[in-house]
Length: 159
Image 1 (spheres, rainbow, N blue to C red):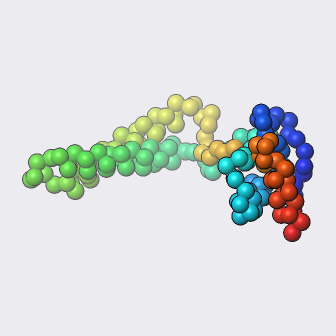
Image 2 (image 1 turned 30 degrees about the horizontal axis):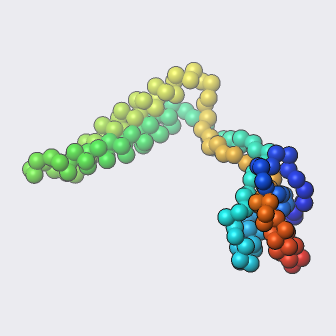
């Protein structure tokens, strides 16, 4: 649902076409304007009232920290081993260098993951992902195109 009106801090020279509770609604309005031939490069979707959202994904134990470090640096070791193997002498086994790189990278990563986890002193014993979320999305247009965009969006809302 759209709510006409002006958000608190509009970029200079922009007109608020509407406010949407979900990003997909603002995206659908832009898609409608695009389908109608409107020059969409004059539009802006602006998230308002941003919040940092941290989703806790699990408990972080010493074992998990070591495993995560081993996995991340193991891949790096594998790539390094393959790179060295490409430029090594013809008799050197490429696969053997890749495996050694994987093993040494995983061992080093496990130690680093464990050390980093222990360094927190138990103050952050969980894993998480972070992202930004907006409470609403403002659809803005250049002032010179506002009248045309309003007309086309009125058709869209009337459906």
